Image (tube, rainbow, N blue to C red; front, top):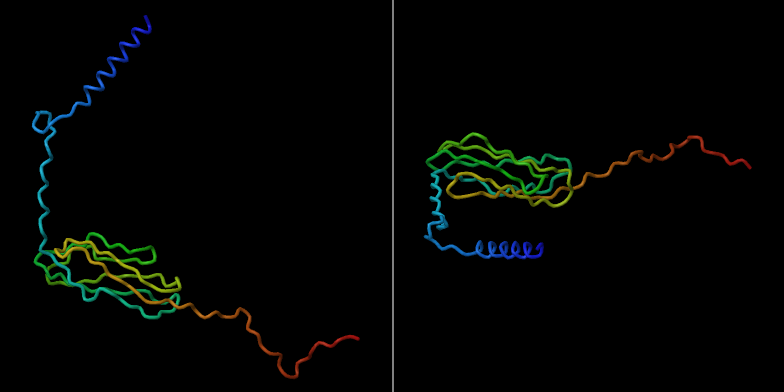
Length: 169
């Protein structure tokens, strides 16, 4: 008896799974129609014009001033809103204006590089905004030279006429 009930339950369960897998077609009244296309995002009339896209530090001393600025102007007809500034690594920290830049007005993006890292510099900052020209990628480059090593205890020669050790013999 237990086997019969188990077998009937198994058959009923498999039948339910089989019928549950039946496909639906578009327009069958079950709400499986293709989703409507989202309306296109409105195009902004703000635009960003950078004075330069690259800052070259040249050779800079370890621990030196790693700050630079990128000046830009809103050449559009609407306020320019910078939504995000992101450095390519933690050693490159950008600082972007929080307030909208009105048409015809200018502002700056400040970038600080950690000059305690010796070697070549080639980093980027990505600026996201509502500009119709899209995102802007700024580049900093250069070379950080190591500071000269200073001796902890400079060696000075023994002054003339100073007593010297004598060997006991």
